Length: 221
Ligand code: E4P
Image (tube, rainbow, N blue to C red):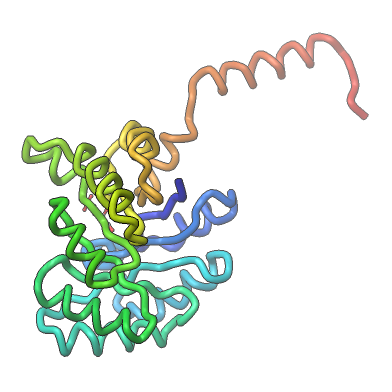
């Protein structure tokens, strides 16, 4: 399973990219606003410069009609043609715009997906990615991860090539469950990435090795 970083904070992207552990970035209007960016184009270009060549960056429109969605998508694509994946909502306008952009070879990530039916429609429209929102479903008492499992199984059954991005990830166990479900990608906030790495026994082990080494008086020169 590949990992995307779900953030618009470039310092976080730099830190994760330096460790070589992320394969792309997803942004959305809330994340961009929260990070205080005023210039989306400059942000996307900066992210493209941080990530390895060709890494996908999801760039989301706030347009509501097909024409503007398609125009936005084409504009976003020009910002970084090797990276930009246009993020569109899973609704009627989003499907039509996805079809248009896909015809031009522009990849689309259909976001705010909350059902297997929506994922099937996204795949038929030509979406490169579909993003089921796990945490937001859990929040209203549904089983978000069951949706990821069902979408992965459905796409496999019908040999559809759309990749599943497990999104709205709230804790490290969501990542483990996404792997078990067979999602191609999980997009995770930086805090979750840190939690994935951290283990008290790793820290304790490092401490003990250092102590023992110091006590032994041995050299590795
Ligand atoms: C995915 O692409 C979205 O940006 C994100 O995962 C939404 O997560 P949230 O439900 O925590 O806002």
